[in-house]
Image (cartoon, rainbow, N blue to C red; front, side, top):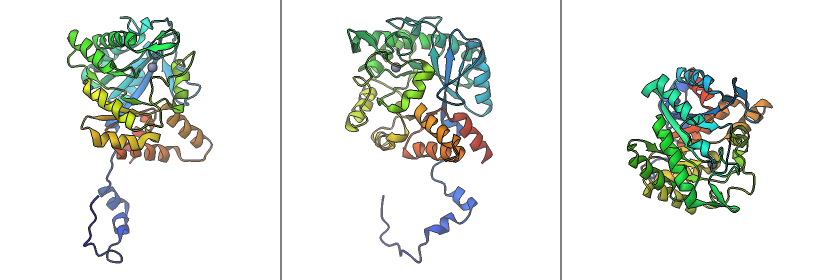
Length: 333
Ligand SMILES: [Zn+2]
């Protein structure tokens, strides 16, 4: 920020001049959000025939494979073009093998989207084990501990199977050291040199994930995720996580959650020229829904303000459960 020392100051300077009416305010608007900034999370559940309403996130549903196209088409008609797919498998095991099965729910979803929409949409797939392992942890257990290096091979297999099904972008979220490197090498060896990796680079162990865990049935059965996800107390360590992903060859970095971590989004923005994604998580969504449901805040205004703040902090793209609503709000503007 440079101070204009020659500025005459008040009363010659009146900042309110620039806020006189809506047309002037719009002209001078510094941050703009667009429907093209958003990635919409879509949940696809194996073994159901009709969509299931989430118990914790009002308005969010889990879809059967047969309902996926209709849901994405609705979003497409609102202008959205990017979707991140989360799978809810009907069976789990110790190695999370349904995560890398050729006929897994995510693999089938990607194929179906690719067949219907071709290159008109960006298909992103979450790469993790927690929805698929009996333990609910993001890696493989050895004893009571999540084993980093054992997990890498499986994460790489998941990413390759997603790429093989047609995913444009794989998004490793397990917070294992070396996961981006392992995935990049495996993708390249399999000929998927153009598959993008979006790392959940600084993913924090957050209280704001709870609503998601209900919908994705991925709560850990023992312990917590603090031995691999970031502590919200540390900001320098978060920057190291981002730097490590960059060194391993990531294409897009991410900060998750977004709203209580806007300072970190700004620091990452200042640190790298890579595209920066921020994930506005299920807790952000649920809090606004709960407060607006009780008439305490206006849902549309709160969503607009919250998502704009993430962009203003420096994020290029946003994953948000509010994507449908904000698309409608922006169309009404
Ligand atoms: Zn996970």
